Length: 141
Image (cartoon, rainbow, N blue to C red; front, side, top):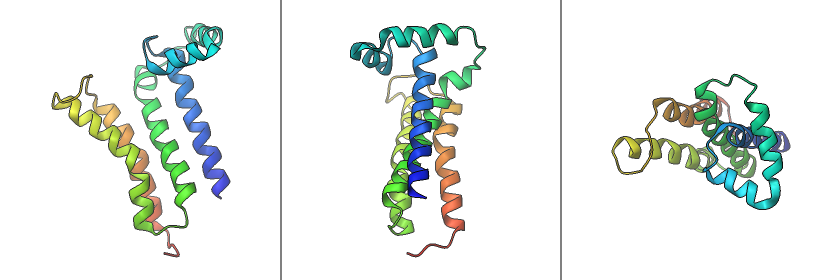
């Protein structure tokens, strides 16, 4: 089961990255890094292909964060799966809480950016699902 969590987490991480590379502004850090490590032609091809697809705004702007939040949870859970339920919940909360926290700080004017309710919900949703699943299962510890 650990390998399946790790594989699924890796696929979600890559999917979020591909969406970001394909449709986000060129000034984003991930695109700059990809181009600086020699992937400029590949990124250009991906972006050109994406121009022919009608991608909803929420998919382009909010879904990558949700996918990365879910990927982190799955990868972390694969690492700490033998820990107590309390420890698993704590370790798996880090990235979702950072995402939710960054949105709340944007709303408060403490962090640059545009606050977005969809981002906030989609950062939190994977952790809420994980918590529900984990708490509904009987665990060894």
